[in-house]
Amino acid sequence: MGVWQSYRLRLQRKRWLIRAFRKRRELRSVINRTAQIKPGDILLFSTQRNEVTRLPYFLKYYRDIGVNHFVIVDNDSDDGSLDYLVDQPDVSVWYTRHSYKRSRFGVDWLNWLQRKYGHEHWTLVVDPDEFLVYPFCDTRPLRALTDWLDASSIKSFSAMLLDMYPKGPIDEQPYRAGQDPLEIASWFDAGNYTISRNHRFGNLWIQGGPRARVFFPDMPESAPALNKIPLVKWDRRYAYVSSTHMLLPRGLNLVYDEWGGEKASGVLLHTKFLDTFTVKAAEELTRKQHYAASVEYKAYAAALQDNPDLWCKWSEKYINWRQLEILGLMSKGNWA
View 1 (cartoon, rainbow, N blue to C red):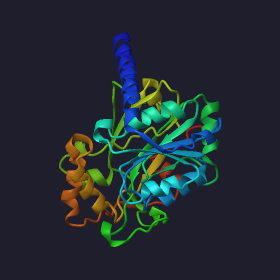
View 2 (cartoon, rainbow, N blue to C red):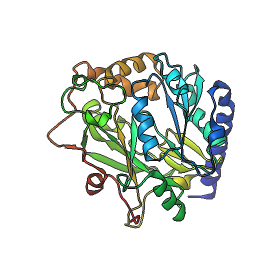
View 3 (tube, rainbow, N blue to C red):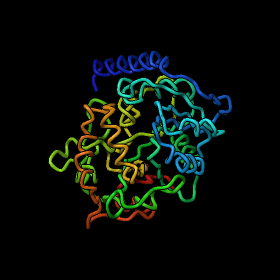
View 4 (cartoon, one colour):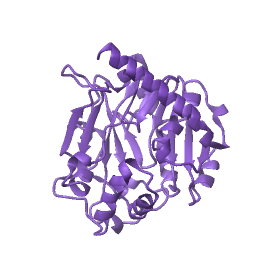
């Protein structure tokens, strides 16, 4: 990368940080327990709206693997999820009625909160329907991974977003609060993924899976990106650019080995496709707060009219992280 391009990216990062500083005015602290945060704590940051059904298991899952504190932005929920979060002793909550779209889909809000509270902490940025799976997660807590990353001088950890779905129509099996969503959405596409490199930011761009296969069959290039960098040893100078797909400084996006080896990586099990999704998709289509004039939710709405079955004869049933490693969807690298 040339000197001029490097300079332009530094300016862009400063603009994102200034924008996040300005957007802080859109956030109102509802309950701030960040005084509880201790040096070395692992923090989780998230933006949510109307996820009261998902939140109990979401919080339990990440507590169990070792997250110490949750910093959550509630975007004008009306289903009781804000009250639920306020009652959780390890959660700090900010509320906003402002536009999700005009905050760059929540990125500005979280960039500010990470700058203020995440400095020198390992921070995990995920949605309430995303569950991080990493090498040895069945026997080692998240801190074992972050300790190894620290010892290896690695500051960012990637995880491919893997869409999970049930066998049968999406609306067939009801999901109840506190339930492990993988009991229902336990299937995934093992193949049909495309990978390219974003030369400007240096990150990989991954597309495919059931969303490309079912919702964007004629325009797979318009399917959502599946590449994520959700786990970062945060510094107040860092900024996410587009969701957790890429961030600045650019070197944090180099989460793969260009010389034929493999760097350690994980998977985010994405449990969007439960029976709650039909109502959620209709709501988000009406709100028009998502990327590219909500083109993704337009595709969902069109396909969901027929209550589709995302399962096909090539679908794989999820077992554990070792299965994902064998399929090439994640890697333990040289972490033994």
